[in-house]
Length: 342
Image (cartoon, rainbow, N blue to C red; front, side, top):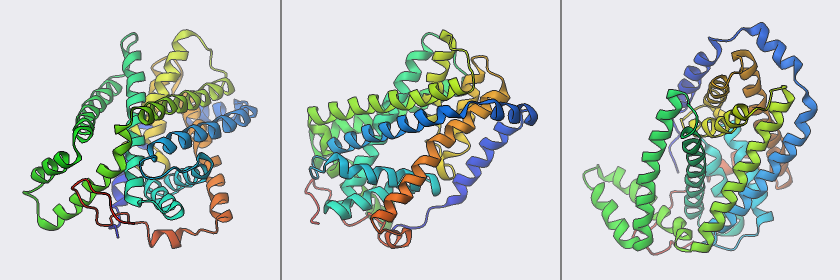
């Protein structure tokens, strides 16, 4: 069973970002911007969001192939439920929730499923950072975003080097990682060794070029579709679509989702709004209008999936309490490259 995460870290992070978000806006202008938006655009935005969820489900299908051939339609509800939990609970507990659901329903390793979700996050970071980096070659970007891109590039280089090693030899990768963590206390080492085993097994999809290529393709389709939500809501707020604004909104998609990697409260509230607002302000939108846009876009990304997730929980007769008892995915896993016995 996993220990309860320290939620105060995410709460503090959210409070800091909200402080910087709110200190520079005129609330009367913010209220006016909220009221003037055309909310008929919410309908296509919500439809597009659930299309993006279908692309995410297809990506997960290919990443899970080393563990089991799970049909995309059976993954869809688990993806929705996972996002619902992310939006209701802090520090992305929905990822654990989702790994438990699919492991329990499909009789596959929960720890391996969790590792494929970690691979999803890496693919997301690669696509978003690549978009942000490419844009930064042609237009100026805010200094905080330059720093974010640099940190993400360093982190991804480390992750990709590790994945390369795992592709060559799981046993060698496990042995090197064991050596790296040997100075740590025994109890902590044991927990880390469990995680090593989980990732070595769950990341076997990277050894299949076809699976990883398809997963990357669906990552691109996912973010192209989610970017459409930002553009649809930009129409709702009456933003002019010159070349600078088109680039600015695409950069805002990348910035907002990269910054939500920072631990925060439920739904990434705070980092998401701050990154979205600061990015499009950089391209000429007022603080009040940009803040209103960020808040409404985030609501589109949170509220519908929470409602759909609660519906799927109800149809599957699942309660939060029943899952939370079994949500720990740290079953002992050997680090020699041999799969765990389910």
